[in-house]
Image 1 (cartoon, rainbow, N blue to C red):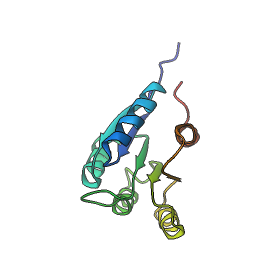
Image 2: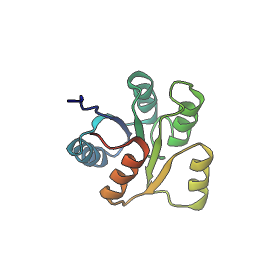
Image 3: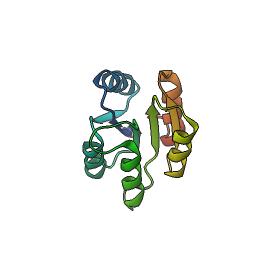
Image 4: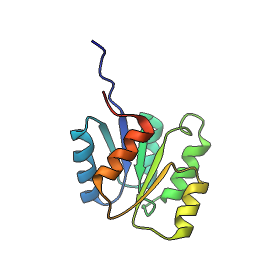
Amino acid sequence: MAKKITKKVLIIEDAKHVVMMLESRLRANGYEVISAYDGQQGLERAQKEKPDLIIMDIMLPKLTGDEVCKKLKQNKELATIPIIVLTALARRQDIKLAEQLGVDAYITKPFMPDVLLSKIGELIGKNS
């Protein structure tokens, strides 16, 4: 029998209630979850943990999501990690900037958890 491979997801979000909801939903779907509550901590966790996927807000303390994206994409070891932006910012210029920074998906809050889970599955495959 093949060993189950658990995919690791890093959440970078300063709203604790959003982090708790995401952690609960992701763990229930078999993902390992790591969380960070500001951009600097998120960047450090990404460098240390090398997650399979990152879900992050744009409006973050210490380093903004845009700054974190830039730094991730400039790091050879981290540049290929898919990034899903989960944010309340829905303006066209915010979406365009995220695309220019190499974000793989842009989901606006409020969001449907099933849409997020489907996008995660699309980007890194389902746990099996």
